[in-house]
Length: 206
View 1: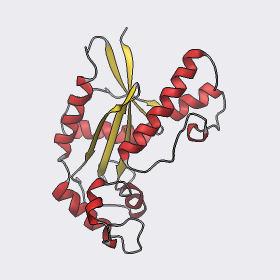
View 2 (view 1 turned 90 degrees about the horizontal axis):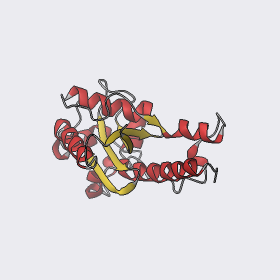
View 3 (view 1 turned 90 degrees about the vertical axis):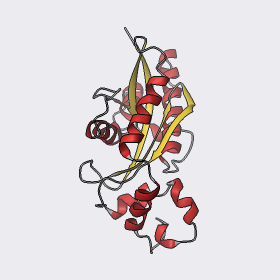
């Protein structure tokens, strides 16, 4: 039986669903070693967007760091223009196919031997983050190392504490506020998930 190797993924996007909107960025890290990371900002596949989604999804984009002071690039400004951010990503983002191929190669590099480890996508909302990752692998014709599955960190926490209303981000495992940079968010989730897994193995609630 292959050992599961959890990989936390966080996605920022221009809207709620693939095929209608674009993934702006995604970040990922190994749960057992959050220092091993992958991050990409992508060329959009569509110009369509929802402004509230862009206001969140653009908060941590690194490409906007060089545009500080220009309010049309600032998601916190009343003068924010999502369309100019999408145009910037068209110029400076990585082509999605290249990014997904690089991501797959990164995953396989950390699997050591494919007959020993099975990569498992994890997220505190895998219905959202996993949906985007699976779609982009499929759309750009790249074999999906996650197959079609994934685990929801928050759901696992509910089961662990036996409380359907519990949320891991309000638990002792959660260490910081999410910065809404995809990589920063993934690292925070991974550290919380790792702490929970250790507690699960010990049979104790912290």
